[in-house]
Image 1 (cartoon, rainbow, N blue to C red):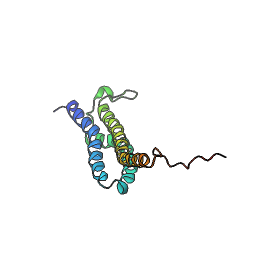
Image 2: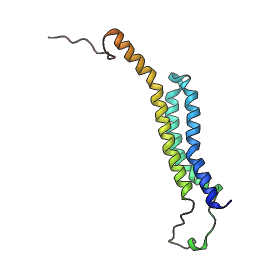
Image 3: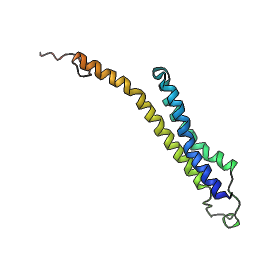
Length: 134
């Protein structure tokens, strides 16, 4: 396997790892949403940002690009390894979106309950005091 194939596989893994981890953590947190979801949202957002910052560096340490004499001089840009960086960035963005989606999903039952309570009491889901003329 050459470096290009390894780079594609590792880049794809870097993009999907945070989503898989956050989906399983979110499903576990939804079992007791009142207790766990606030911590999940905060930890998920911070972990996704940290992942975007450090995952590519760790991948470069484990899978360094091969040395090419054409790119070894100063002032030249070696484009190999950029898929690792983009995979980590996509993983960061996907982790942020996954965390936000699970946070919104945990709020939906509460909003439905509030709306149903409001329809039963005739307030339409709001808790405003009655209007007094005067």
